[in-house]
Image (cartoon, rainbow over all chains, first blue to last red; front, side, top):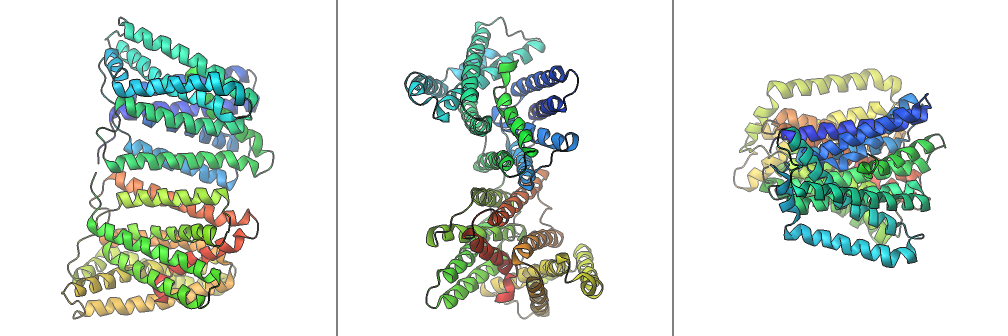
Length: 306
Length: 306
């Protein structure tokens, strides 16, 4: 079995730091400290920067599912600092998120070595990814112009679908811009190429769109229903987009792919338990997990808040 | 990453067959067919033979945790044939057991190649295993003569501890006798060596002891409490004994060992959910999961019923 590459380790550390910042931001807010609002927002911003940077180093298949860890950080801190008690199934959920994350970390593919943004542009304009992107555009178009007026306010899947589909393209742009910044810092300025600016513009466009529909979804439906559905769809589509664009699976064997899938399913089960357990205990735990849910969605909309 | 060896595949198929037989035996019984008793018992016997044979081909680290699959077989069959509905957490538990089993199967060590029972005897008499076995004997002795009279009827851990500690030695004897039978069938008669007979006698002795204390535990405490505790302790100690005796981990790297651990934890979480969900839904599901729990303990006491 192969070793974890140093870039994956950097990405992992950044993703963990991101989870710690985002997870603790909710506790800071709830703790009701003076200037809590300011500290909480600052923690979220640090978290999102770390998350953004993580995408520059490691494959999306590694970074995206780790978003679930911010729920754990939030739940564990709430236990110690707010005295909120967790249901035993919530603890099982935490353990599962950790085990699933470990599985993914140990089997994640190596990040495709990229020496310029032009190379990312070449990946993005290969037939496979063009087909995926066109599929996303057509589907989002149909959802917005045909289904939204009919079912938008009754069927959660419309808004969340638009967000998740757009989100998978957002993350690809985040990767491109992240790699551009990383390379520019190491002395190879990438902002002299027009491709870098196209990725940056697309990133802004997708972000605004994702933010718009995420807000619509949160206005219309309960956060606790939106968050898990959004987490699952967003993570799945992002991983799919990454596999198509960066051919993450090309140098992997069946076992590694199977294990990434197993790890992902384990995290999903854990997240599901964490979200469901709030219905099973007294109101004290309720608000906490409700907040950590908001957390996931805040995190998935990631770049939106930068 | 390495391929799964053909012996591990044989062991895996036998362990799965065992789970199917044992899991369905409970459905046959509950279905209340004419001669149900006979068919149910027959299914259990086939299951135990398959389980016994599985140990002859694959490492205990692979075979033992797969025992959890019989719970799934039983739960799924109960859903279709008895119309018993499963709680959503029970389904999550099933998924986790499957994911955890896949993880273990894909990372299980190769079975140590054994060409005669004398070789197993050499493994068993190496210092490491002698220390483990002595530790088990001393601990079982203390539990029986000192703690049992004081806490036997109030603390579950006494009886279950005796069963699990003895059980880990039983499985090692099962492996030795299983390998002896396998080799004898392939033309190398092993029953000419006195070591084979010692293993057989020890197997009988440990079985009787395990059966005795398992019955005491089941007479004193609720099956639903005994089963999961027993499953966890028995599986953990058996894997530990196997690692010490057959040095399962010698040719494995950190990732593989970590993944075996992750898979085991995932199965434990799944089993926990399956056992706990019976408290959360109507009485219709109750008795079913209660029976499948008895199942686990029946399975763990495995050889006892042969």
